[in-house]
Length: 95
Image 1 (tube, rainbow, N blue to C red):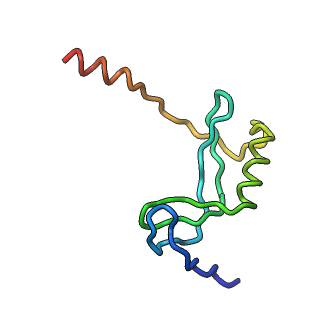
Image 2 (cartoon, rainbow, N blue to C red):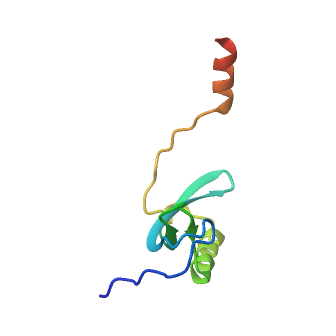
């Protein structure tokens, strides 16, 4: 299998020719749940780290979102720590 050719176009965010093909993960809010989708094909800028998806990828992401992210189809689960901005404000005021 031949490696994918590097794209010649410039990054839409920073204008540098630093784009490469990659597989990325992205987090989405669905109602009150945070979900992660992995293995998303994207162009990634090595300079500014912008991620760009083609139309087919966006359509598939919309279909996944439309399914409602059913728990039984999840490949894995992640534990995510939660922090409060207000906790830091209270700490600073009390010192």
